Length: 455
Length: 145
Image 1 (cartoon, rainbow over the protein chains, first blue to last red):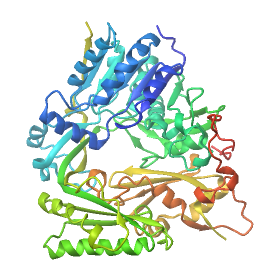
Image 2: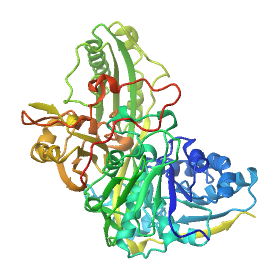
Image 3: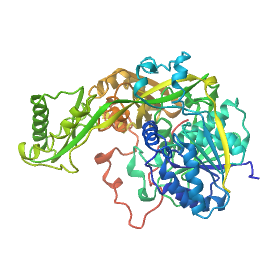
Image 4: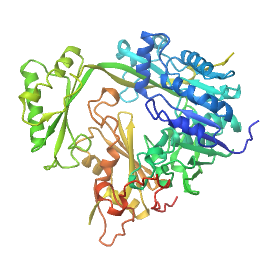
């Protein structure tokens, strides 16, 4: 039995596309009890649904399988248990691939728990028939407005399913859409046996998860005073050392780069925050204005005092739908007069398209190096030595969007001098995906936990 | 005396619903007080006039000496539907730090350096070839919690 004193929970992946080596370093370079890996951004779910539509064995984070082949033997040896939402929209296919990878890497025994119930795309027609219209949280339109364009619909599941899987001995917990902080909260509830109405502790675990869920963003990544950070090339990913009362220390493995300070943690606390007094998850409502943070040693920050309130009576649903097509192209303009010439190119491009009969629902012209990030805040530099012109369109008509892509290269020979950087061919129309956030009553969602052993 | 906010605070931003959020964190109580008075939703809306198309909301986070700003409709659609280079508001934190505020003539600015090219020369050392030590030499300013 694991001693129920302090447990160490790490994060080795903040999104699908994050460092492929960070989880390996987390497992190998220091003591750890649980490792959480977050693969699912909103846009990821729609991509996975498309892949699954083409191949019923697809629809999960394939990177995860490659990774597991590398770390499973060490995980088994050290007793590290893993939680990952890599299952995407097909956790069972992910589980099968994982068993195959485990066998290949010489692992003989492995218990996997899969948590499902988040994917309500097949249930939507039935729900609508029952009068559950999943109104958009931003503009209150009913989901029937976009039913024919829906790509994915996933409920942010409560953490109960992951805890049940751990309680039943899962060494790897695979989920689809769960909350990101839940990957960190689940091991705490499992180990310490917290009650599901112990709001302060559930809030503490949720805050811990919020701090580490974006990987290195709390260990020096994205830090305002970047010049204080050392060892960018071996930046450490975070872990929390949690006590049974829910207080915790954020730190990283000894010898890694980066920094854990009161300021790096404070910045991550406010990342993607709404109302700081009510951070709503399916498990609890956490009050971020109750958080107390203090330096507790080099690269160690203690977090305590966290208050929580009862969970709400609904879950959040994240839906994605087709929203026309878009395309983006770029050209590089050298000096002298880079910006002036870039503006001539832009005017020529839009003018030529208009003369050819093409106008668009939405267009955008940006000058990278001048105004693409801080438009209206930083004045246009007159000494810009070179500039990248970035032009984009969006429209329901795919052909029109592709026509735009053919209008960029001609500027190299029919525009002002010093135009270059047109590589990689004509930009093609890609599908634009939009999101539809909504709430669903709790009682309409079933969390389904399945345990399976490698044999 | 006018100074940019990065002399008084640090910040982080990301996407949030139909827009972005910026968490602005003061280096001390005096800086927090100046922010409370001058970095109002209206002032932030004005500063972001080229970017924000909706309203600006402000929430106090006094335990972190900070404010959280919600910049509604600031991403040109957001997610994969946006045509913007910065479709997730990742740079909005740095943008807010460029906003100027008035400080009294004798105001004691925190000793934290400043962003980018304006950082004191000694702070922008080349990374050590041997890999160096794990943490920066400069202490974070003390924060009352």
